[in-house]
Image (cartoon, rainbow, N blue to C red; front, side, top):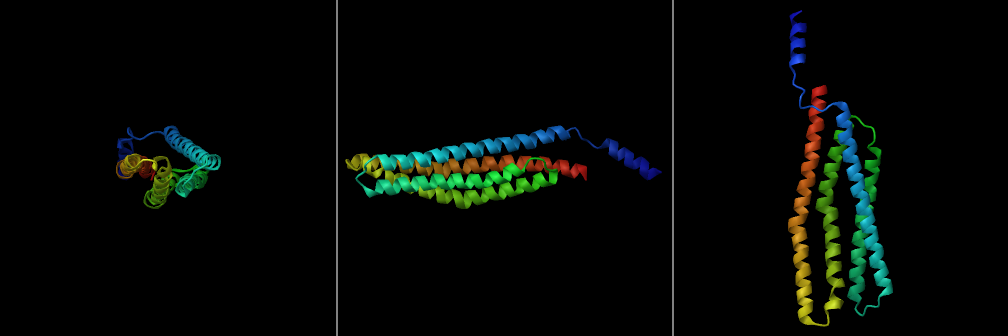
Length: 194
């Protein structure tokens, strides 16, 4: 009898103030899913529009240097690579509709691993394609004047380095922090339910 009384006392003394209820947790999951889906669709649309726009510009305009065409093709291919990558990840997010806490934790962990792979591999390839393409594409408009060429290429190179060394790591850290907070919150709830 003492064990039952002690168990009841422990059960009633457990602090659950910081735990969200089930409805709130479902809202968190749905909000996470809808934000990510909206962001992915915007990236797909923007990348597709950039690729189409670049191809149209290359077909309509008459450029004298081959480097302009090569640069345009590299920029369009980087945009298409980004769109394809996001289309592939849409499948995972569309399957995340009704899931348990454990399934959502597995989903968050896979999302984190995918983010790391994207940051270390895919984004590097896309940034290289886009950077080289942009440098080559800007050669023709600036080729008439050496000073103009140097200023334009230096400015472009400076912006690309700023994007690569400052913006890219900050965005990665912010996304990792968001995923980690969500994962720890779900994990805390799962631990309480055991």
